[in-house]
Image: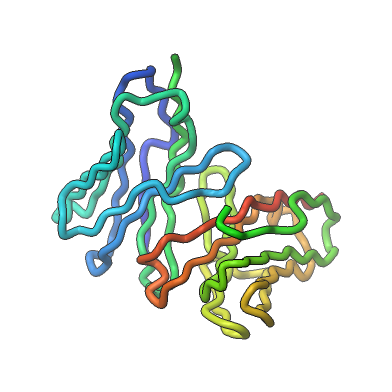
Length: 113
Length: 115
């Protein structure tokens, strides 16, 4: 079972600040690492994803940084806004096969004005 | 929610009773998944399906069974509900044979309370 360790569990950031969430994985064989965003009362939705042939991917204020040698990847939210307040999950393909995905335990982000 | 509905959305039941949750999709996606979400555990895979009548276990499958008789419907059954199965249950779908590389689209969730 592919383990994905996510930190921190919760995060409070002031508006305009940078939010950083980290994930570490075990199996180096996999090549797709998505981040999901979940608002209260809703299902998770894909936010951004990266393949390890690049070290960084940016979409608007959201950036994934990938460190293949350390088996770590991070989500950076620049200029954090109150509307970014949500729970964020990193994910990685499970070791049992490509049809399955293992999720991190989630980070609850609160952006305060 | 990408053409995914879950029913019921909320349910309260008693220990020992059977419960069936339904996931219905209108996207004709091949892969369907059931997850449970609990504080401190994130999303954990219960069962998934890779086609009609084709299912496999996830990491927390004990006490759960599934069935998929049609492409659009994936049922999750708790044969005899226990309080430890109190959770929020999410259905998800994906379209590719390499499903983990493609986006998983999640339903709105079912909140289950077992008394």
